[in-house]
Image (cartoon, rainbow, N blue to C red; front, side, top):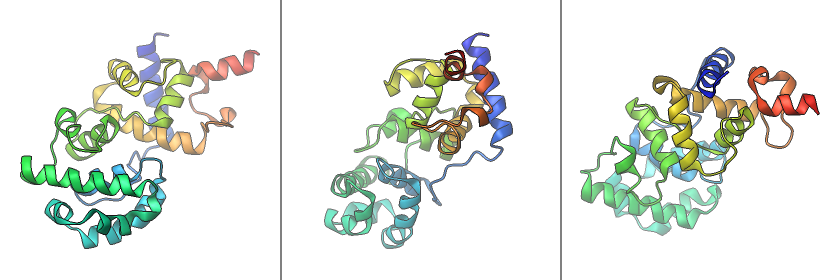
Length: 213
């Protein structure tokens, strides 16, 4: 089986295992997803979803955030960790959205990564979920699981994104990455993977090595 064939098989298996492929962050419009994703760095989505309702009630638009004091934003996101850096990035990001993008969230990875605090993971998530374009969101679950499957043996997220873009069907790549998050939390744990329960064990290098040793 080639890597391309394995990738297609993985997509099909995961579609059956996790029919509902949705982002676990709660949002109502593009700016909210952009900010929620920034808050999710080194923080659980569950915690972010607790914090964002009050945050988005206080600051409703990019202009609201741009005009805010960083200390004001800090008060709302304190429990998310790294709150000083995140607050600074959010205010700077929104100032740039107001100054250069007419308060409209860009629809390409290339434009999104120009915003303060926005990396390729965040940009791909927004492009895929908001604008429905092919996207590969390389987070820790994606890195771990695709490595165990045998698609790569590296940690470089940009290189992994490129590898997966060549392997995954473009129209299914974004949902596949959402399913990897669900699978990583439920089955393919970093320390104690439940391999016997895994829907992809028959195509997984990690499982094959584990059972042959």
